[in-house]
Image (cartoon, rainbow, N blue to C red):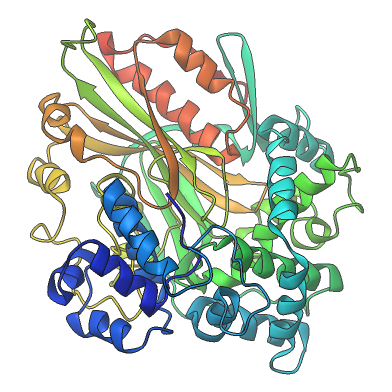
Length: 533
């Protein structure tokens, strides 16, 4: 299936025709207004908002082979080439990149932000991005992606251990665990009190308080390396067709985590503030390692500014620290008729799509989310709100739940009458014995400075798998979805050794399966996992 780099009114309308839908049925299918769909037909060059870009991606990915072929034919009749991952009309006025530069709200937010932080006149960022964009080509982008993918998570973690000189002493250590003789190292900075929490979420024991009037951390004007890296990030995002939504995010100010209670406070920031600053650190490190360069203080100019030492990593209040919960879902299964196996848990692992802005191509648990508000900025500060929302989007195929842009018109998008059937069943069976969410660990990822709440979603009613396993499907953020049995020790060990794990993904996976082994009884036969911290 071809991937659409940027949806326009023309392409959206072509998809509607390919699906043989009316304006009304297509609007209902996407979760938008009929007038929006009608506007696409009237204004073919219109670029839908980012939330609808994602909904259109999902609709195309769910279309049949025949419908996808019909869509490609309809588009090719009036465009120079069919949509592809890399824009084919880079220099043409009205090309995909120019459309996004002119119409994409998130891209425009990024342009204004960078103009302001760099001290440039309005429009200078746009000019520089165009220059970088025209210098890119599919071969160079593919070569860059391959070079970055050749650097494993263990290599990056080892480099960061050297950069921060984190040894065996001190309160904070990088999370490392032994599993079946394999030493698994991550770049998640944690301490003993933050591990093995086993804290139920959404049951009154977790409480994050929103402080809405706290000022943003003081930031000096951007250095030249920081400016160049931000411009390059935006040019690559345009070339690859990466999704970007400048949604509000919770910024963690402080946290106290224990098995009895989780307390803390959060402020608010915007995604662009993170995407063009700390989110650039991983590529800086990976590119240095892939070229055989040193990764020591003084050799990584962005890291030297944003996260120069361990004190800066854990000093949350004085810097920008966004992040969120990521959860392993473990679902009880009855004895298999075809598998000829006893009762077990099945757990799901995702490979992150090339269209996400971070952790591209890496393995992670699912759901994985930025902690952000939905419609109630105070109530939504609780971790369970984000996890349940992401279950709807990333596991049950519901588009646009986290929309905070113009498309969000529902006062209660997670009301039981609006959620998917699998989630409705769970909401109707609220007993912790049937299913629950637990926080199993906390840490701060030194790779990008993000906070990570490792979590476990456990569904103990084995009837749920029989009823709803067919409804589980990853959304546009997921390139591939894999499932594993809690009884298969060999495949588990091979998975732990996989080099493509994101640091936060491996941290959450090991902590969650460690907890699953403690409470899963005979359904679980996994090797012991022993954190070294």
